[in-house]
Image (cartoon, rainbow, N blue to C red; front, side):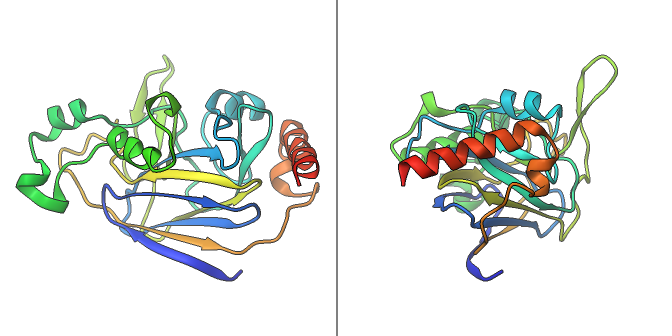
Length: 238
């Protein structure tokens, strides 16, 4: 597939863009132990966005991996996971905020450290959302790519260090034009006492349309029905 864009995100970097239907977005963990917190919205109708409960209950899963899909709150698919060398991507732990980062790492603001200051996931999301006319009311439960938080028998979650190794990837194929909003701040449950700057390579690749026989749709009948809803949406819209 032809590469049409790439960018390396530094630790606590942030990024947002509209990625059109059928294109692939590939992330590579360059250092190991990366975390990519991500939100997704229908680029044309931004009130439609990634829905964590529907994604999990519709596919009978707790975490994401290939060949599962990312469902919207309108019964459609935003994206499908077409490649993945990690095998577990967190869906339920949310993102960090300024108070928790200050409590854990101490004060380290821009005036003190310039670009090495301690950012947090919530503020990074809000900065990027504002560029698209969105804000606090549009924050929903996010994905944490590359990260694993596993439950014990009583349901308590524990962060699993080393879930992602240097060179690990995850690739998404978009099933509609999608606004992608992300940051690379540390996972909120990461016990590491050091504020680390991990790097992630982001690449956008050209791609072909999916068919009804795609493995991402075959894994669960709910995925195929959601993809069929996409086809109706695009047929009537365009």
